[in-house]
Structure formats: C-alpha cells, structure tokens
Image 1 (cartoon, one colour):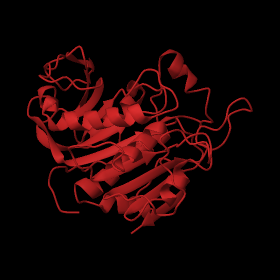
Image 2 (cartoon, one colour; image 1 turned 120 degrees about the vertical axis):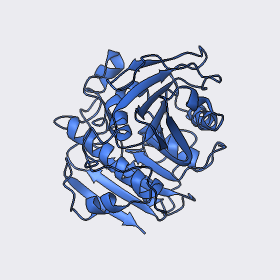
Image 3 (tube, rainbow, N blue to C red; image 1 turned 135 degrees about the horizontal axis):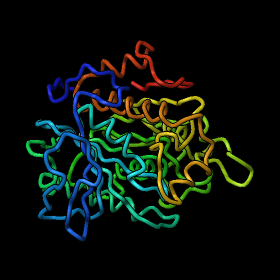
Length: 329
C-alpha cells in the first residue's frame, strides 16, 4: 500500500456523513439519459449531462460533490433486489471520498448468474471508455487506477466470480469485498456458475479481500423459508478459500438484509422485512458495513490502514457487536 493524499477526513468511518457532501445520480442505459433522481443539497444542477456512450446497465452512482480525484467502488446488489435499496449505504461510503457505481444487473433472473457476471464486467469496461466523466458533478474525477469491487448476497458471489476472471475486464481491481456473499442454497446446491471450490485458500486473487458476515444470516426466520445465507455456501466458506491479505468480520445479532435502507419500497422492498431473520433495526448494521468498507478501501486503495487496524484491535468503537474478527497476513 502506497501513501496518497486523495482522501483525508477527520470523521470516524462509521459516521454516515463524512468529509464530503454527496449526491445520488441515476444514469439510464439504452435511453441514454441521466438525471439526479435522488439529491442532497450540494450540487447546483438537478440534471446531469447525457453520456456520449450510455452504460450497458442502468446505474445508481453515489459521488462526492466537491472537486477532487476519487477512487471508485463498483457495488453489485443482491438477489432480486434494486440498487436503490442501498442508497443510504452507498452515500455513506461516498461521503468519505469515494465514487460508488451500483449497476442494476437485472429486474428478473433465474438461478444462473452468468449474465450478471458479464453485465458487471461490461459496466467495468464502460468506466474505462470515459462515459463516467460525462455524468459526474463538475471537477469530480474518477481515479481508474484505484478500483474496488463489492457485492452483497448473490452480488457477492458475482463479485468474487468477476474478480476470479470468469469475465474479462479492461480495468484491474485492487480490493474485493463480499458482504454476506451466498453461493446457492447449500453445499452441493450451488447456483451456476459455482464459485466455491471447498479447497482452503484456493482463490487465486491478486488483490486484498474482505468478507463481512451476518450472525443471523444462517438462521431461519420461520419453517417456511430457508435461511438467507445458509451454512456451506456463506461468508465462512468464502473466507476459508481466501488467501492473504484478507480479513473477515462477522456481526452478531444482525441479519442478511440489515444493511439495506430503512424504507425499501414496493413488493420486493416489503419482502426484505419478511424473508430473512433480521436484527432489531437496520441502522447499526448499515452503519457498520459502510464504515468497514470505508476503512478497508482506505487501507488498500489509499495506503492508510490506521482505521482498519483500529477496528481490528478494538480501539475504534463499532456500532455493532462483532462475533468474529480474522485477518490473514
């Protein structure tokens, strides 16, 4: 990790409003239009420029408004979820000095995630073609040499698959984050293409990896539904196949969907409160996930590991109780 001055902030990584004010931009794909569908009070215009080259998938982008050159994080949503369900989490990360790009990989899909992997790769390649510069606020620029990749649930599986080069990209990732990743229903019931090999330290990844797990993810909400992050295909199995440098945080008393926005609209949004075993509220888990992502990105994209180490050794107070903290180094 090399020193950099791209990001500097006196705010704790767990504060949802970091040094930078943020805005959320929605960028359409085939229609070729872009607008600020969600907006804070920082940007002078509610309409962004139309990109000369539209992205392959609709995007939700959380970005700082102040001028600067910022690292990027591509964020992949979970199974049958909308990228907008993560708006608060994405803005938390962006407020600490990152541009976060969240593609809507699909509206309806089956068991096979091959299409999602290809769409995530196509979105990554679009970044290198310059389309992102057309939609960001004035004087906000992406640093394409500092690129992280994250995914939640099935999106976590997709992120690992992309990092393992199951689809080609023109840009290189420097950090990988699996947020309660899931590779199917059970060991032996992985969804195609399978990512887990069940061979310890078998992932050949030329980047730092962080895996975040939920303590309640492998607990059934009721007898009618399976657990949302079953044993045999969940965060523990993913971390077991990681090589150094890697870290693993498991949050006690919170569930698989507790990092989503409080208000997730529509039938799918209401279902997020019904299908998985949840904690008492989403805010602490969401704040932890946002903060640990910021700390990890600062460590491996910006060369400042102080906050990640402070969390590791318990010097930084976290908004949740951690049942597991593991590092491979």
